[in-house]
Amino acid sequence: MKKPQRGGGRPSREASALLGDRILEVATELFLDLGYGATSIEQIVTRARISKRTYYHRFPDKAALFAAVVRRIIDRLRPPDAAGLFVGGSLDEILTRLAEAILRAALNPQALALHRVILAESGRFPELAEVVADRSAGREAIERIGALLQRDASTRGLSLDASHFAATQFLQMVIASPQRRALGMGVPMTAAELDVWARQTVTLFLSGCRGWTVHAR
Image (cartoon, rainbow, N blue to C red; front, side, top):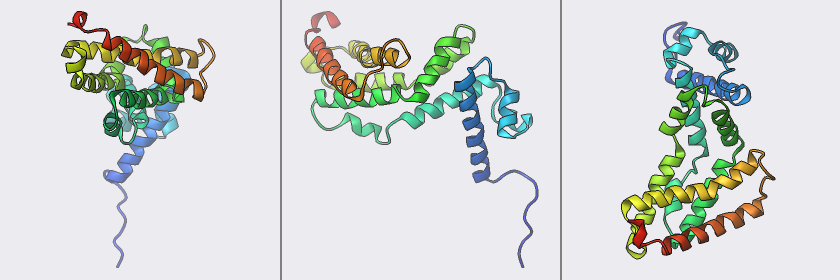
């Protein structure tokens, strides 16, 4: 004899995960299309077809939802085998692989749209900058690149602090100009130009590191 289906109570774990995905999908579309300030909780719950009670059970406020959206975008842009990018080959080869992966992530349409929202609205909503700082993929990349450089420090004369600084500069060298151009401040780079950009950036960066020994401490 078939058991009667449950008509109420809490949703199953699978249903709860699907609901969470739907809320985040809706919120991502609205935040990136309309901006943070113009997106209301009412719009989100209406489009997601949920109650406000369901929303507030998951997120205390709009900033918390935005933080979840940022984390979701970052997680989706992270290479499946990110750790594998840091092993195998010379330092030049590893940094070139990293530069190529960083550019792919930074120039992804969702990443660019998120960057536009942060630039346009962080002045009115300081919590946006805090959210990005707390969940920044860039910070994680700097730590890992810094550790990579530190392993090579004996031949380059870099201190731990200098390695962190150098990793920060490397990330900016890779991203800054291609990202600005992709955002409309110039002609976007082609795939071939980006390949050349990644290789030449690594060459310039390592040349600078080789000449930066005594004064790096």
